[in-house]
Length: 143
Length: 402
Image (cartoon, rainbow over all chains, first blue to last red; front, side, top):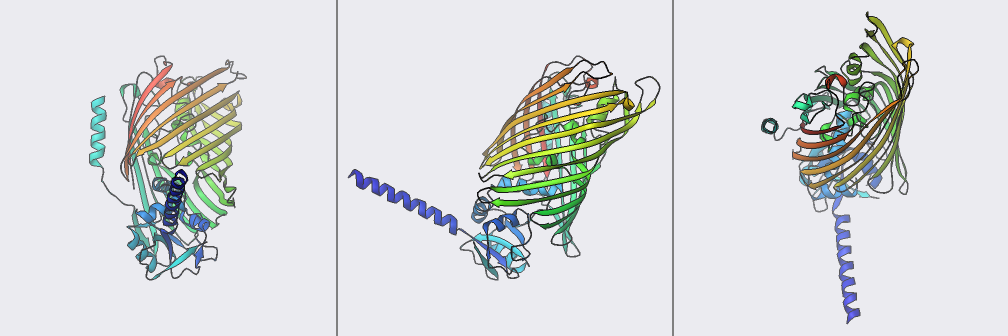
């Protein structure tokens, strides 16, 4: 009986971990304007682009990041891809802006606005939840 | 005094707009961004006057503001400029300055160049020390970021090379900055203010010189952990006049050796941030046109922690330790002396919205440095009475940025 209970707890715990892992991994998709040649992007490239350390992908495509003001996709993307909290990211951008070392990236309302902006803006790259309709934009695979 | 603080805060909060986005507009299809900030503080201390303000009776003379505009000219080339002004007791005195004005070309991630008047990379916060809204604390640790010596490190007219290199996932990222240029101090900084008074009686017409150095910072593979080292060398000349020997005579001082070493670390995880830095500043200079030689050895370090306890509330504390040694001076007949300031600080920061904050900060200081020799926040001219060994100070500050 003891053994059965142990196995049950183990299975439930494993399922919870698997479900939460797949939810965070599949929660966000990276989208880009159709002018961007690349079909995939590495996590490092994404970080470099969104932290304004580079303005192009490894294939030479020029990209401009667009951020959401908040929401689930924003929270996940900022934490998992940039390794920062939203407050720390805002501080980072402001330190660039007020020391002459960068500019404030384009920021729009939420998933729908990000998708619409990326679809119509040459070189734009952004993130939305997996369920968001992204007609007119291409989805990039994260390597 | 309490009533004054209350009305001061009430006025600031009531007058501030709840929402003011950055102002963007297009020029030749390129977006120009305009940003700005302003902060207003009030400082009150028990006995000693501090930071050139009459803090013993409460001082509102604690204001600064800046505004900038920048735009990309191409995908890799960007220009911009910022003006800055402050009135902090006897510092700044509402004389605006060009804070930075840069043209920046970034070839790729690992190499870029920028030129013009450039903010100097030195430790964690040298280039952002004026930007109150970026920091938990109303005053950064004065052992390293002395507000009265801002001019000496804040920017150089010259150029930088910079970039970052990903070592590997196991080794993290290295970022570097190398720079060279001219430093030109304001007439309204702490050093000119100190030397205007007795016994030096020096009035500078210019103070500055060559400044060069570098910064290397390592974002370690441990998420949120950063470590770095900075070095600055200087070759400084000050010209002016003095009445120290009676009649008005020309004055010149120059450095024979002038360097700063700084080591720092930062750990940020979720709502917690811990910073620590150590700086040593060494100066060997000829003063009174070569009549005397003076050495100054300043060491400072601090440990700071901040935790966001709620979305809009951050609490922080730091311990800052400053010491200065003035060895026996050749020709001056001055005995060896040393001074210190040990500062324990607690802070609460409330973010009223994304653009505005209020900070309340307590300082509990032991010592006052060496007021007659080198700026350290306490000045003889501001404290004609005997300086007391301990100082407690309350700083309330509010800031707005867009």
